[in-house]
Image 1: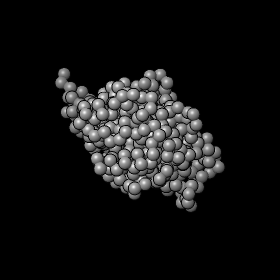
Image 2 (image 1 turned 90 degrees about the vertical axis):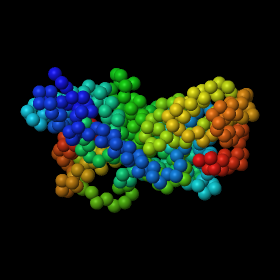
Image 3 (image 1 turned 45 degrees about the vertical axis):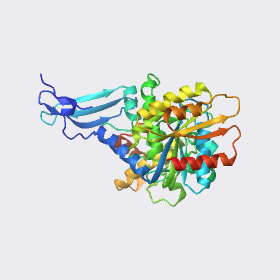
Image 4 (image 1 turned 120 degrees about the vertical axis):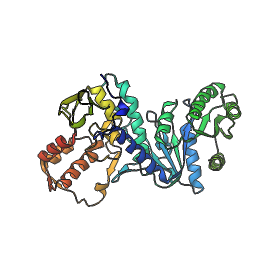
Length: 262
Length: 148
């Protein structure tokens, strides 16, 4: 018996699952057409202040006239909306998109924090049994919708605030026409450096462009020089050393450096 | 996923999708040559996986709605997270019978706006001036809107 293979079946298929996926990709590309620069902010390690750096960089850019947005891709630990003072903003549903809320300094933001009831974890309706099989797909779809279904409009920079780990970066990279530039945040310790190294290497292997390193929480209890070490290893600039109590000048300089580095 | 009628060596074509309401899905495919029909049955986990991808077996029956997956699948959503564009201006959609309004009111607010729009669009496309529970049932069956 000769059974044709999947790829040998080329008759029109009304179900068109592949075509539906392609339509989703086109929608992403169309939605991002007005975004000049998309920067993924990543670390590979939790607690280094990614969201804090992301939000303040976006605000600093906005203060010098750049149109900025923050897509909070940390679906399970979203903080960007609160940091931008936009947590309680209602999202307006337009004909084919959601309008992002506008936070401090005019930064547009969409975050799962704006959608979940207080204190509720992100959970999906569906069969409990074997939920590990589909939960990842649901989170990836939520990320896709945050990109494709939000009327981001014309932006100079859209920051995507990624959660710790590598999975969300890979999901983002698969959505985009080209892999994003990555802004990498670490704290000074060698332990942080180790975690960030793995994440940054994985991102570069997926074709990401390294934008530079931001060393956060400098001058306090965390000793080390992970920022310099990573910058040397990856031949990428150390964009900023952010102290425990940064002044507006620190963010302004970081914003300028990011803008010039993209 | 494709289905091949081995006897005819022809790719079977999608015929019909059914959502019995228990989280499972049935999709029928027919051989265009001999007419044989097979049904693909998915369990709740498999059905959920497909839904999580934001695709529909058999093709979409309605255009993708903004944040469709998030609004349809996230549990514990904030009641006042969204403001529908229709709430901000005079609407020109169909009128709703009292029973239909009561049924709609039982839909969680997090997703209610999207559900309302789907029914309103269905009524508009079918030239229906008033959305009744019968219209909602018809739309649900025709569009495959399980749980709406």
